[in-house]
Image (cartoon, rainbow, N blue to C red; front, side, top):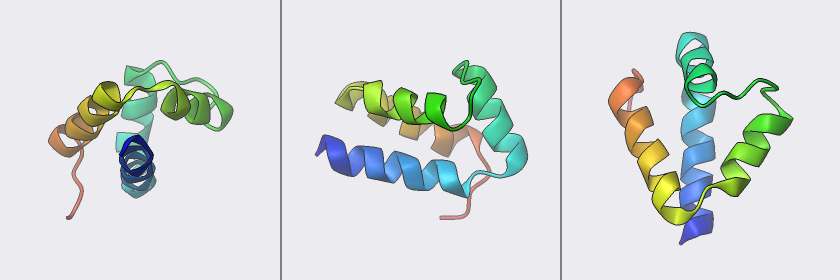
Length: 64
């Protein structure tokens, strides 16, 4: 289940606009948007992954 959640999170991050992506990185203090982003996603447990997904849905202007 955790792998599916991380896949969903990754797909959502890829759909973010440049402005939303910058806000996301700033909010989670992700400085190196490559390696730091990968480490950020890898280090999330299942509950935190679900929380981040929910926050993206709430804060970003994505079409579903």
